Amino acid sequence: MSSDLRICFVGDSFVAGVGDPQALGWTGRLTAHAHAAGRAPTTYNLGIRGQTSTEIAARWRAECEPRLPRDVQGRVVFSFGVNDSMQVGDRTRVDAGNSVANLIAVLAGARGREWPVLVVGPPPVDDPAHNRRIATLDELFAKVCAESGVRYVGSVHRLAADPVWMAQVRAGDGAHPGAAGYAAFAELVLPTWREWLAY
Image (cartoon, rainbow, N blue to C red; front, side, top):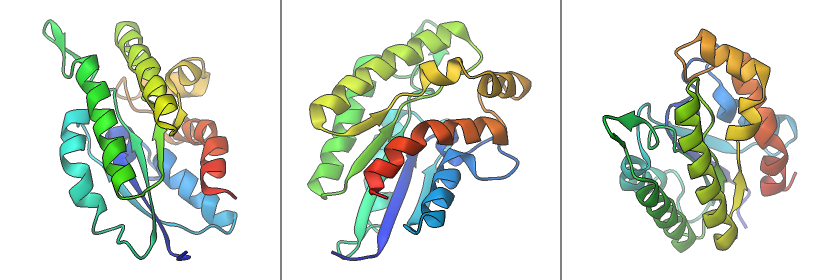
């Protein structure tokens, strides 16, 4: 097996680390942790602000394939859902059933390329009604991943109870935290990340 480990982080603004003055987000902090532990992956941040799972499902393969050629150890981390569950008028941007279908589709596509996948659930924002919809998606996503044998890290409930995350979200734009909030997010994902990368 190649020692060239490459990982694509695919998702939305939380993947991109919007709001972090250190420009690391949770993905950059996980990458730094892996490097400090001697794992040293090449990582690609493919987060796009405002995108839903439908938009992500349409673009992810074309973006990952050139970055994860067949002669390397390719892996993919997916994280989305906050934009799907955003209320616009009398409906959400993406129906929960379609969000689930999009997750199933990207997992099947990654399986077809033999790319191990980690899914990180959507985090909470400063809106209780929106958070209830995010929590519903979190449950549905966790079930899909369990049935597919894919590692899943739920974040909505734990970050909603994290005073640093919520304080920074409220102090920011109502959705994105600052550096300390993203550090808390990274710490939440870290145990599963380490198991997934086996270090």
